[in-house]
Figure (cartoon, rainbow, N blue to C red):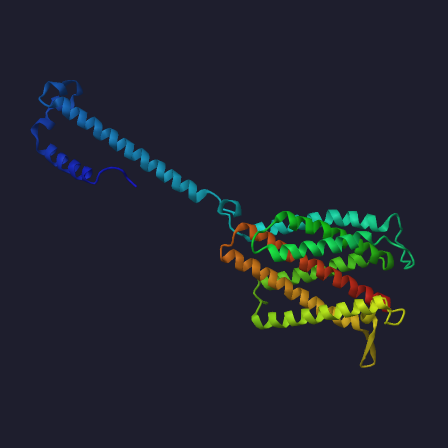
Length: 329
């Protein structure tokens, strides 16, 4: 705000009008600075003129500085997540990539630890070390529960990074376990997972698919049903109720459709992949809503965490689907 009093421009206008009517201002003596002081009141007029010129110069300098400041603001890049302390898509993407970088590092450790010097030959009688992926699965599950149930009060990035590290052990270990039995399966599952994630992201970005209350209710019901089925399948496998030779329990059973025997695991697996894809839509939608509502920047960690949980789930399910199909052949 300009600090110059409002009456100053008015007083300057009155003085200027009087100056044009004053014969003394038209005399040669007034135009000669050396003769100003020879007239009555000349020194005061000179001082007034000096102050007027100084004020005008100061005002012009202030306006120029303000104009330069505005131009600098327009030329500056837009404020990001750090400057605004608000959640952005770019910041969430960077955090997601960071988590997957941690996962890949520990996945390599889990892979080497699981193989323990074994050569991948496709011999299903080879014994692998299951300790890495058991540690990773247990540690990842505990940390996931802690993050989920405590995130409303405080977001802890360290726990999310630790979750990524444990899940890396799990992913690397179970991938090596499957690769020993079915060589090439890891590459197949990885490419399929990337394809599902890429297609889902593209459809969401183009507005082709969106989360809805009805679809979310169906998704939650299907999730509960799938969890109950999975727990039942594990119990039946551990107790030896199922006949021998069913490596995946109930999922190894076949269903005849139009005279074609289709593994039950393939049918359920396709449904689970669709569920995981919709879970990704929910993750993308939550991130989008957080950005629109100006959510705090720390919530970007939860967005990255949700994407990682879903992508790992999707990868493991695709890994198992391919294994069921290849074992049935």
